[in-house]
Image (cartoon, rainbow, N blue to C red; front, top):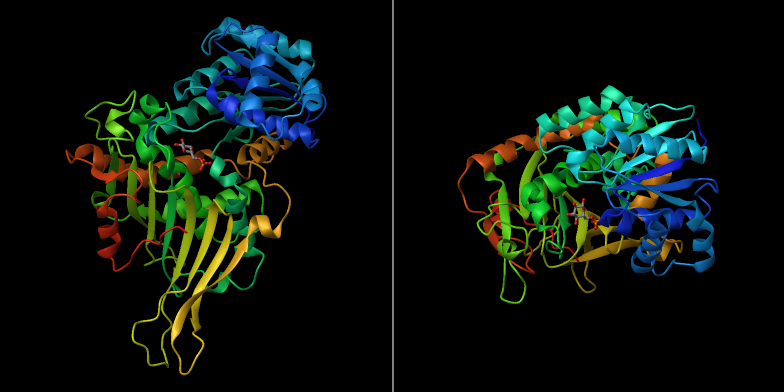
Amino acid sequence: NGEHRCAFVIFGASGDLAARKLLPALFELHLRGALHPETALVGFSRRDWSDDTFRERARAALQEHAPKSFDEAAWAELAPRLSFVSGGYDDAEAYQKLKEHLQNLGQDNRLFYTSTPPSTYAPIAERLGEAGMARSAGWVRLIVEKPFGHDLRSARMLNETLLKHFREEQIYRMDHYLAKETAQNIAALRFANALFEPTWNSQYVDHIQVTMAEPMGMEGRGGFYDEVGVIRDVIQNHLLQLVALTATEPPARYDAKSVRDEKVKVFQAMACSNPQHAVIGQYRGDGRVKGYREEEGVDPRSRQGTYAALELRIDNWRWAGVPFFVRSGKRLRAKSSEIVIVYKRPPHIPFELRAPVQHDRIVLRLQPNEGISLRFNAKKPGQGISLSRASMDFYYDKEFRSRNPDAYETLLEDAMMGDATLFMRADEVEAQWRVVTPLLEAWEASYDEPAFYDVGSWGPDEANDLLAKRGRTWHTPA
Ligand code: BG6
């Protein structure tokens, strides 16, 4: 059913994610005509709000979080399509109220979004199922936010609960990194060009690095984060997905089944090399900026990692022997998400050089300065051959004048269209948990203190040692 008109129900409509991401994304879709004129936006939460309160709050959220696109006339069109149902996420009666509300709206196509605490995902699915809302005369889809489970066991249980009431094709598991334009461009670069793919393997690639660095600290999420930590927050999902996009075989077709089949194969071949050698770090304060243990909601003796660096391997024909170094952290020097393909040195150098030639690199920048750079060796002008580093750079914003849609915009639109390519399948999330489980277990079984690092650095020294031991160094984001 390609019909994208629907009732879009946001569980947790009064929360932060709805204000920062969902409402602005829906508004952008409305502005560019991608939200069907009859699509209704229904807020649901424990707050005792009226339709009008929801409208006022939504308007304030748009003005705060999407000030550049906010437009009075467009808002005046959208506002009457907002309505609100108040109730608890586990309260069967509230779901009856919601059901009637949706019937009155006359929308048979329904999209439910869990923008709520993770502990509510299962109850929401169950109450929807029990109220008969997992089926309707039109289509019904359920978008489940991350984190998907706390470990392999809980992820399996969550999948089981969801699948009791919904079919897999109805379930859209979020990982917003997949919808970043530059993450999608990895497939375009690899599979729409003849130039790169022939060298994209262990014969030519020395190793691959994936970095996701953030300057932000807890931003009021300390209580949540202290339960989760960096591995569960971003490595199990965002970083492993980036590794998979970089490593997968070409799918036969670019559709939800083929793309996800190929990624699952990568996860099945993936393992953490020496989980006990992974570096788990934590930022310490500098008097001006709070350290992690001083953040609100964080246990002052917490061992939780706000940084991790680790080595993955992918035991298959293409990648055997090629290390994938992955790192992510909070309160680092700058915001940067990038993938670096580091090539082997050429087999023979005919020039007399003072130092060994540097490795060619392809840098895929997800953010900021979205684009791709190729770093290689070139001859310096002048007599004889001496080498210097040169670069060929492609910047998205220079090449394409059009606006880069936010990942949430892409994902909400895809879910309304019924395209699950950029969402995760049940077996995929479980395979991802399998990869990080030994890492979590090794850390949780140890009594080590995390490796402390300074706010505004690139992480703990131990992370440099991790690569130095393997004869490599981290690429410094530009
Ligand atoms: C979220 C994590 O999934 O991704 C956050 O929970 C993190 O901790 C965020 O800050 C980063 O997303 P982006 O799109 O800003 O890189």
